[in-house]
Image (cartoon, rainbow, N blue to C red; front, top):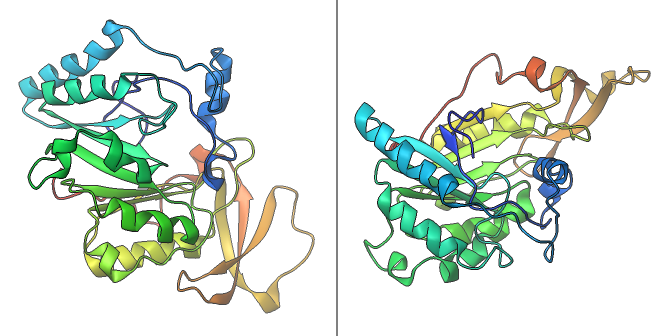
Length: 290
């Protein structure tokens, strides 16, 4: 739980429980697994999950009252340390969350999952009928490459949420978003990987997604470069050997499925130094519903 979260695209972070398992290439270097280990929480399907008492859950009510007093809606990201749609989540945790969603009308609950295919059978049945999905519940799918996009975006588009969004972090390759998808998505978040074993993100992958979103009128949020910052792009004919140990070369694709001649030189400078600027510009797009 975190009031005034440091995650750039949310106001608060709430966890129904701690504990998850790896189901995607994006999970390979999971920060949540590392952090959970420091607190003695195991990882994996069968590992015991950390649960919380009523004081923890009542934070949602406190945030709701504060938002009402201030006359402003607040975004709450659920979950940063687990997945609400994991079939190994603690018994009753989802039903408890649905109750608190109904009791906090001044909060927009951003449910982000790597298991988007489980959502339809795990939310209340009445949410799936026309007009039944709560207006303060947004649904998001984590997508890190084209394979996941092709598999999971059609699934999220079957859900009648007011806002359907993608979290493309860590972005591990070029992704083409079909026009039919973009017309039904409300938000796209893109970011590189952080942490000790972070993989660099080619600038062309992020630029292509930005351009696709702008062309379709979809709000685009560039969260971070991660550990690796782009130094410059050079043509394949100009690539030199002998880069320092803190730099790497990655061959990019423009995001249209065709490899191009660009090679990005990325240097590991740390998340803070790498920053959030894409082509010297800050992209903080939010859904119109916000």
